[in-house]
Length: 137
Length: 420
Image 1 (cartoon, rainbow over the protein chains, first blue to last red):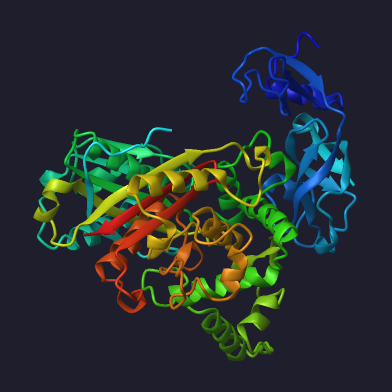
Image 2: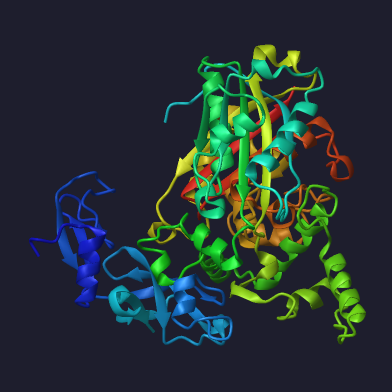
């Protein structure tokens, strides 16, 4: 991945290929998803790309009944809520994502610490169609 | 880190605010004029507008909320203070406190002796969906919002971790809302200045008047458990766990300490100020605390030379009920994991051992985001000067604190004031 330039555009281009591409500091080994060009841990600029396994655990979650406009456009509302969460990735970092495969009707039963795997999905129509990162229990 | 001190003392001599609420006929400048007029009236030895040398205005997003950018000079113009330098300061929901800090730093540096600070926001011109989308821009729109997160959603995620780690249930959150409405019922400036029981009785009366079936709620908890009256927004947060969308403005006057008594015989002294920044919520090692709030608090305590036990009046950033519980731990009032028990035991009520948000907090008073940080200072001004009326805290508090959060804690500001 020599042409991967640690930008959100490059990250999203990889998501479109169903790949989870972040970065790792060559100096201190700190891992980043989304990718960064400068290590916020040791301040080094020697960064390499790192493909993440997509495996992780649920660190935090909520079931959202009133979402942002783009989620309403995707068909979600108070009658059809969705789960959003923070995922603790195997490689270290945490990331926000929509969570699938959990009991939306009983939020109190969703378990923090549950194993999750990445699930790439498309949303939007025509030119605004885009691949999003989700995780599945 | 080196201990930081202000270059010279800064005093708070005047404070005022508009009512917070939904005001369809008023824009930010008109609300700011109301806040400014109340502020100047609070200067008990009179006031010469020509003495003001600069203005700092906190404003999150008038561009999105009312289609107006470049708001600071409009505020100074509308109160007749041009050509003083007018600077807008933005830090999401902490914008007001950032403006205050700029005023503090400007006086402490010796550049100015008299600085006007304001906070403004007009949010109700948008629909609830529009306001939700506008507020979402205070989060990371590249990496947080695509997950479907909203602000209630992100604070709800904090709540799920807090419940998981410390055993709290959503019931405790309802108690925070009940308490803040009790406090706000004594605040004439509050958007929802009513106890939840009063809101409940009003709804019953309205149903009866319209010939609709009258709900059978008896207690406030009956009302809050009713999914129709108090719908889920982002589990475990319901509608009454969330601060409202609001319009409002607030204004204070800061002066250098040595001239404070030209303005009032009861100046308050700014003895500690701290500010810190942080990464997005998902990037943090803890989700049960806002590290930047903790850091800002530590800096402010150290500068002031006081401890949590010395703080007798405090306004914390309760944009959601869980945020108040976390704030009381981050500021050292309760140990990590014990804030929820304190809330449940009533320690944070006006009559409790550690009263929090005597104004009603953002929940009941309202949360016009850019104005909120300055609005908190207005409450502390009154509590420390004994002019808080019906909601005056007992024991004549002499040291007060404000805690203001931008986003989910990417920006945090803590200030400490003292009456001498």
